[in-house]
Length: 174
Image (cartoon, rainbow, N blue to C red; front, side, top):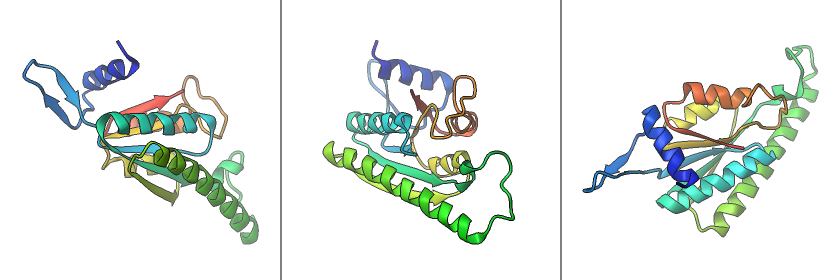
């Protein structure tokens, strides 16, 4: 049994499948036409982009790559609200440049595969934005752990929050 088949069976088991077709021989085909791939430029998210493109190829779908700009990730613990505005603007600009680079790489991969592609860069908390924007999708794909590099048991904290709170299927790529 292929990895994709095992993943699809797992989604059916979880009851998170939105669209499916029942064939005459009682086989179920799941439809993933709208695929949200969260990317932050990390190696895991690059693999997630490739997985999203593969799913889109298999189902004739469209990939939407999402980068969530979260300047807070540069600070340990609580963000100091006394930081000069200029410093915060510089950090925000750097985060946005990273996002544009991550999205551009995803777009290049999608073009090479002739997959319809959309890009989104938003500001906010990554897990919350992935869940919010993923609500209109058929599948969310993200890396197990992103750029924070702070492992939390088996998956990162963003991935864990998305898995726990998403109303659509989530595929985690390692």
